[in-house]
Every structure is written in C-alpha cells, then in structure tokens.
Amino acid sequence: MSDESRILAGILLLSLVTVETGGLYLLKIVRGKAPVTPFQEKFARAGHAHAAVLLLLALICQPYVDATDQSGALEWFSRSGVAVAALLMPGGFFFSSMGAGREKPNGLIAMVFAGAALLAVSLISLGVGLLTA
Image (tube, rainbow, N blue to C red; front, side, top):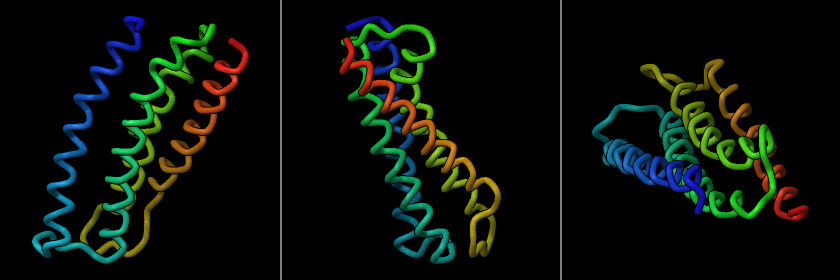
C-alpha cells in the first residue's frame, strides 16, 4: 500500500468517528429530544447516511488507486475526490436545513450537487484508470 493510501485511509477511519457522533444527534431527533421539522429530520438522515457510505467508499477506493498508473489530476480525483464528496454532500444536507423551523433547503443545497458531480468524476477517473492500467 502506498504512503498516500495509508495516510488517507487513516484519516478516513478517524473521520468515521464523526459520523458516529452524528448518529447520536440523529437519535435525539428520532426520540423527540431535538426540535426539528419533518424536512430537517429527512435531511439529517440523508446527510448521516451519505457521510457513512461515502467515507467507506473512499476507504475502499484507496488500494484500487494504487493499482492504476495515474498521476497528477487524475490520481487526485481517483484518490481524494470521493473523500471530498463525503464532505460536500452531507455538508449540503446539514447546512441547507439548519435553522429553527426550516421547511425547505437554503442555497447551500448546491453543495450536494457539487459533491455528486465530484463523486461521478472521481469514480469515472478511477474506473478508467483501472481499465487502462
């Protein structure tokens, strides 16, 4: 395993602890101990789920990046793009729903779409890198 993969994998594993902490907040919501609207509850669930799944996917991608011949921007997208999407997409769900009584997302919902675009580019980069290695 390359040093880059090893270091990013360590960071990703430590980041999963923050998802666990977010799960505690989600438990407060579903137990009625955090006052939120139904919209905010849905976005909290979506943000929490996306954070966990995308961090795990970023972790899974690391040894595959080592199996490619990529360098430069393509290697960055393949190695780090999914991890950055794991920040952008959940962040978009959380930040766009913040505020007492909010019933619809604010402009920060754009983070979800930016993360989705980065995720797609990164997975395409890694897939093509693996097929052409």
